[in-house]
Image (cartoon, rainbow, N blue to C red):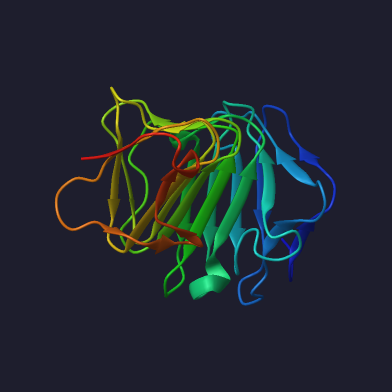
Length: 219
């Protein structure tokens, strides 16, 4: 239990076991990394549990480094109001959506940002009142099953593809939707019923596949 900010400057590792990180109620304390400090576990039950009175990854380096090793779990709750309760995670391993659960419990609009080498949407994630950024820093964002990413503003950012021709990525954005691939990757999105506004979401504008060199499909 930290009385203020909890800064991870060196690794915290509990291979196969649980890790609990908490900042005290009323402290406004954040949990974040400094330098390369990483929180690591492959525990498939509770995994890493974070209860931050402020936010996660919003001070120090600007993100929290995690390594769930493709099997670990992360459950994270923030209490900060608005941007003070934001979450920014940089995961070292390929990540399935079912490995993580985020609960921004404070009032106001929050932004959750998750970066991993690749991302698979294998469960429904998000709500229409929270901004979400999903960033695949190595390869793709795809889905496994008929699941949907729901957000207020939704940013999708990958290298070699978002969705596939056979399995479009299901998305629902109450606010703005943006997407891009930075390498030789196509974008395939199913935007569902209702109005979809292609705009600026979490710092990214419009939909752009490999600087216009690749295909974009919206349905």
